[in-house]
Length: 310
Image (cartoon, rainbow, N blue to C red; front, side, top):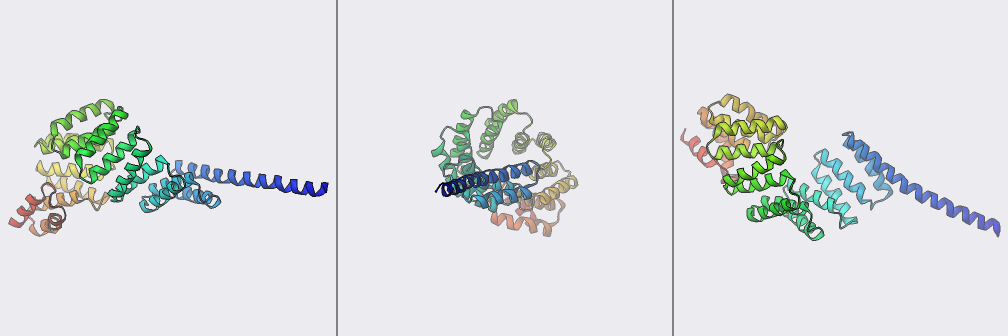
């Protein structure tokens, strides 16, 4: 009887060690994945996170981190799927909901992003990220007054966040409230003068006001601070077109298109270039589709008509 008890006790201890080992094992896989992510090796990170998930199919943190690795590889659908898994197993996982909402925006799923923003507001109504996602989703859905209100609320919760001020200024720009937008950008610049989007937006305002030289100066500041953004080069190209420097302009516009082949503004600017060069066929090649698909885009109607008149 005592031998049997020893066998049972031994089995129980081995079971505990095994369970503990499995728990530690999935944690080690998570840590190894994190190390690979820090080393900018997202593919290897995904392998380790997947191993952790094999050990625990409800491991929300592993799904979240795996989603971040997919995001580094620009695999939005995979990232969204993993975030959805993380949220499935931890319904109040705030960061996973927030990140999924951002991914939905990048994926063009604006209504789903708004749903995640609403979910965040219910979870944490005193967190600036809840209002930030609300503002971004409403901006994409063209509800600018609601977007502005959300960004303003986010700023009251995190007053040192310059990005939130730039978002406010962006909405003011859309509403053609240029003086107000510039005033907000000045506040943002005091907080963070190295924010490239601040200088790019200021350039866009200057251009709308007809101050093309200052627009060029501002966008050049943005490019110095961040030389990876396609739309900075595209804006600089546009300003150079209107400063009668078309050959410099087209090089930048083409560079922008190489970085982002789907940017309709870059295609518009290339159409404008061909209008200025008197090349009707090439101009219409770019502007005809744009006038159908983006009829409200600034300058499209004007230069489409000029192209037809060539």
